[in-house]
Length: 263
Image 1 (tube, helix red, strand yellow):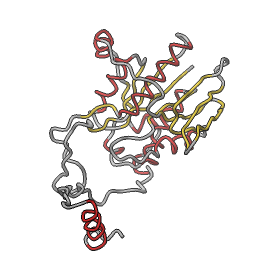
Image 2 (tube, helix red, strand yellow):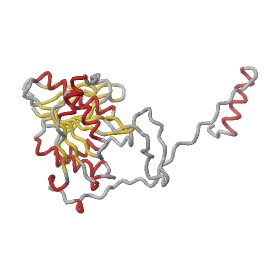
Image 3 (cartoon, rainbow, N blue to C red):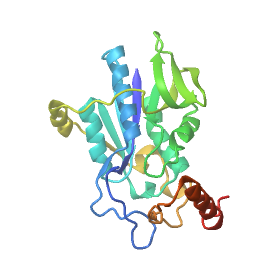
Image 4 (cartoon, helix red, strand yellow):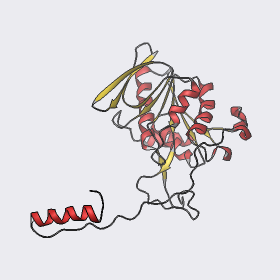
C-alpha cells in the first residue's frame, strides 16, 4: 500500500506576525516556520496505517514551496516517513489552491498512491481548498475534515467519520481516495532522537517543472491573488459601568444603541 501525506510549512503559531513594507505579504524576517499543525495529523495517520498494514506499506511526504519546507519534511522523516519529495521552483511560488493542486497532482500520479492524506487546512491562509482540488485532478473520491478513519481488511476501501452540525457523518469510499485530517483523529507523535538523526541522512527528492512535464509558461495563472494585507485594529480597552444593576442596565442599553449602534 502506498500512502502520501501532504505537508505545508507555515509560521509558528507563537510567532508575532508583521506585514512587510508594501503590504503584499508578511515580513518573514525572524519568523520561525513549522509543519502545519493539521498536517501533523495526516502524517501520524499515515504512520499508524503503516504500522497496522505491515512493511509492504510506504509513506511518502510531499511538500511544495521554498527551501524552508525542507525542515518540515525532515520532521516528517524523523517521525517515521519513508520518503520525502520537495517540489521546488520559483515558478511555483505565489500559486493559489487550484494551481498548487495541479502541480501536486503531477507528483502524486507516478507514485500510484492508494491514499492521499492532508491537513484540513493550512493555518496561514485558511483556504482549505487544495486537497479538494487535488482530488479532482487525481479523479479520486474525497472526504474532508475527518475525525476517524478505518481501513478495510482487504485494503480496498476506507470508512471515515466527519463532524456535521448535530451529528457525525459516516462515509465509505473505495481506494484510491483523498482525505483531510482534523484534530481528534489521532495524537501526533514526537520524533525520537534516533529518528531525528536518521532523518538527517535520508535523501529528499527534489522535483523541478521539467521532471513533471509542466511548462512553467503554461501553468494556470492563480485565480486568487492578494491585493494587500493588514493587521486587525488594536482592541479597545473595556469599559466598566458603575451604579446599581438597574442604572448599569439602562446605561448599557444606551451605549449599545447610541455608540455601538447594534440595537
